[in-house]
Every structure is written in structure tokens, then in C-alpha cells.
Image (cartoon, rainbow over all chains, first blue to last red; front, top):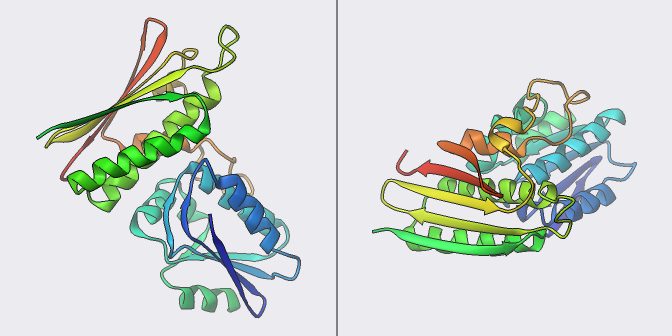
Length: 112
Length: 142
């Protein structure tokens, strides 16, 4: 699963592409963890190009969220496609994670 | 018009790709809406992963066979998942996740069966001889 990363100042932007499922969740976890170094004060997961996620992917996102919380680093997510947003809402993840409609909105929130 | 696909899977994660492809085929040929396809993919993945991870038993440590059948008609898609692993009833025995806890207290995992129950219209389990038989129904046009 391709994971595109970029950096805007102290914000690491990670954009997974395609699917995160039971077959590649572990790979997603290791790639994302490797991209998040100590310099990253904040992480933005841009899900615009993600078309599918199952509980295996939610598990990784929760693990990363817990880890960032421990380090006092911020996390935001943006541009969730409708079925993915539904999965997040059904799981109650919208209550513990900051979900934004667009990348610009998420970056503004992370900087604010 | 109705359509039927059945697949016989070995109990290993790589087999999930075959299910994904079969659902995609049916989705394309019946022109399913994107969110309908998503729910079906998710339900099958979660339940088959469960069978693969938890179905092993002492008598059958190598794993087992999983049969999947999908029947589609104008009203609904009906899925049957049959395996010869040890008895497991996800409808009643899967632990309920805590979806209200904060980040620190939120347990990792346990969401799979819960998501399936929320996304399907019906989910039934019965032990049928030495087999687990799960039936899922997702109605169309809602």
C-alpha cells in the first residue's frame, strides 16, 4: 500500500492510497511509524485517496493516536470519503479524533 | 435476475484477496452503489479474519476450510459463511467494544464484529453439525 508523505513546517502529512485491510495493516503501521520521527510536532492523516478501511486499519490509527497523545503531539485527519467517515462514526472514532473536511481546515486547526 | 457466487477458501489471510475480487466482480456486474460494496467487503473481511484467527482447535490445528456463498437478487444480498473450525458465535459471543472511552482508555481492537452488525440488516449464527454457519443479509435500495 503506497503511503505518500510530505512535511509542512512541523506537520507531517501522510496520505495512504487505496485500501487498508487485514492484509496490509501491518505494513501501513510500520511505514507510518517510520515516517513519524521525533521532529514531527503534529501529524495529519489525509485520507482523500483512501477507498477502504476495515477494523485492522482502525486499530493502527488508534495505536498511532495513543502514541502521539503520549508524546504531546497533535493528530488530525481530513478528507474522509463517505463510507470511511461512516466507519469512523460507527466506531466512535469521531469522538476521540479530529476529523476535518479538507486539508486546509485540518492544517489551520493543527497550527492554531 | 439473481446471481450466485460460491468460493472455497483455505484458512489463511492471503485468501482474502479472492473474496475481495469476487465481491468486486459482483459489484461491477450488478452496478452496486459504492457504499453498498464497501459494507459487503468489510463484512466479509471481518468475519473471515475472525474464522482464520480463532477457528483453530486442538483436533484441527492446521486450520480448516471456509465456504462462502453470495446470493444476490433484486431485494437483497445474502451471504453464508460456513467453516469447520471450533464453535464460535460472533453474534452473541464477540465482546462488545467500548466506543465511548477516551483515547487513553480506548481498548485496541474488538471493533470488527461490531461494525458488521451495524452495517448489515441481519446477522444469524447457528452451529450446524461440526460447522459454524453465519448468514448475513444486506437489503438493497435503502
